[in-house]
Image (tube, rainbow, N blue to C red):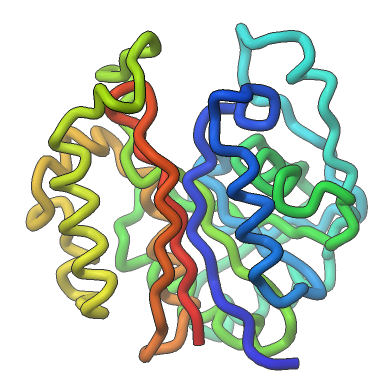
Amino acid sequence: MSRLPSLYLSHGAPTLPIDPAMPSAEFATLATRLPRPRAILMLSAHWGTDMPVASTADAPETIHDFYGFPRALYELQYRAPGAPDVAREAAALLGAAGIATQAQPHGLDHGAWVPLLLMYPQADVPVAQLSIQPHRDPAHHYAVGRALRPLADDGVLIVGSGQITHNLRAADFGAQPSDADPRVAEFTDWFESRLAARDIEALLDYRHLAPHAAYMHPTDEHLLPVFASLGAATDDYTLEIQSLGTFQKVLAMTNYVFGG
């Protein structure tokens, strides 16, 4: 099997699968352009731990880790089989790289199952989840991704799931996409120019170098998965950008494919 790309997905609000105003179809379109993986390793902004934890669940539960949404959302289930073998291999690779890792069963949070429901609605691709470390920096997550690189050569799709801009305190839920704060484009333009240039050093120091970084990410857990996906890519990766628009004024939805 040829090497698989790694992905970074902006998973949006939990209502992405049921809100016709959101760009849900584009996730399915993205999946059709990718080689079919034998398994998926997902790193979501919504599972944070002190050290990496790889989920060895055989049948991971669908975790509805949100409140105040329509009942239909809580009735959604994503019953993909687990990938405990991939989880154990990920833990072994991280350990070999000197990154202490635990393994235990865990379900799929909405940062994992929401985009996967749209990309692989038959739930027929096994999925394992690996936690992020919100208290650690981008360099740590880049190192995690580098350690996981061999999985991409063995049919595993490594996916980071977060949001390219994520400031809920500044979000305006009555705004239209045309009402986007101009600072969003300034931040994403900088970030994508550095991705295209493969300027890893600048990207890892984005909080000091990117325009409006602290405003776009008051805390950076929704951006940390991109560094794992970037680390999992080859040094000479190609970049594909899937721009889906900006919602609620400051929440940009952009997906990145790091090809080999």
